[in-house]
Amino acid sequence: MNNAASRTALATAFLLALSGFASACTGVEDNAPEISETYVDETGQFHAVGADGWLSFGLGDQLVYFVCLVDNENDYLIAHNGSANDADYELYSRFEWFVEGDQLYFCNQVTDAGSQADASDFVALPAADKANPTLSGCGVDNQAWSALRVVEP
Image (cartoon, rainbow, N blue to C red; front, side, top):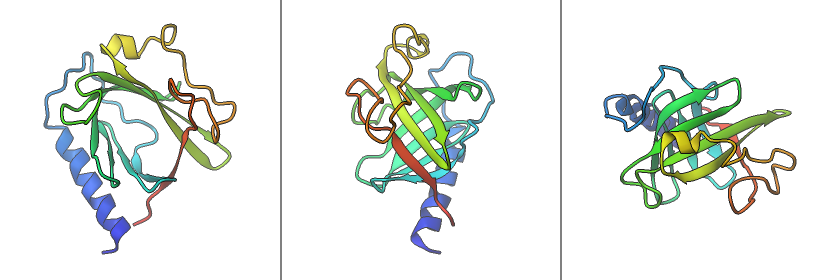
């Protein structure tokens, strides 16, 4: 088994295990993100996305986010940050995504909301700017969006 296949298998097993943990989310839907898959970004960080969680791993810290709400029509999800995450633990995040051409981009637009409702508030915390994703538009620092590509087994 090659390295990519090992990481994909590990990510799949981890996401399956997430379904057994209690979540601080309210009104959790059984709705998988349309982008459920294992990816690698341009920095070499892996991202496993599924109905129960978003796992980021591979370059040091492992970050876990428990999915609370998925909106596939508007391309975002709300997640509860894992208690072992090195920053913003036990808070809420909003992940946004879109496809331009053949490229999938994602932005962790909100990382530190105090509640699921706060993370979902697009008036107080506006959507990321998709105008120039390779250069800017994501997060409070207006950084580039992350480009994802599927990890092939």
